[in-house]
Length: 168
Image (cartoon, rainbow, N blue to C red; front, side, top):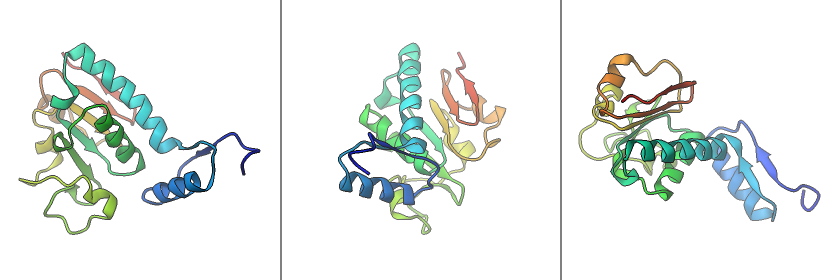
């Protein structure tokens, strides 16, 4: 494809295949390769995250994250947030198959194993207790008003099913 194409934008490829395809294309070509589901979401949400942390005077390495979803977009977001200073031990990832990605789970693929939490297993409601940040990258209508009320006093909530809330 190179040098006639200036870059490649992959679209709508599910995890884990998207990671393998992107990696192979980058190895084979010298043109930029981007997977919109991963990188577009990660970049935009990271900009919002940095701004919200500044407004709330919250240090990224101290913030407690709950990520609902463990697909391509969620994994890319988490990795970008970590590169900006978020701590893996403060990121609680929930998937659609079994709740928290936790050390007691036996159904995790290699990508999800990277995000295993130790300690007590918990539900999404329990995970959101005193959380600073909610990132919704799964099915809609999973977050309730009561769950939001249980979060930290000053929260940053991204639900990529078009709900935004910054409670003061």
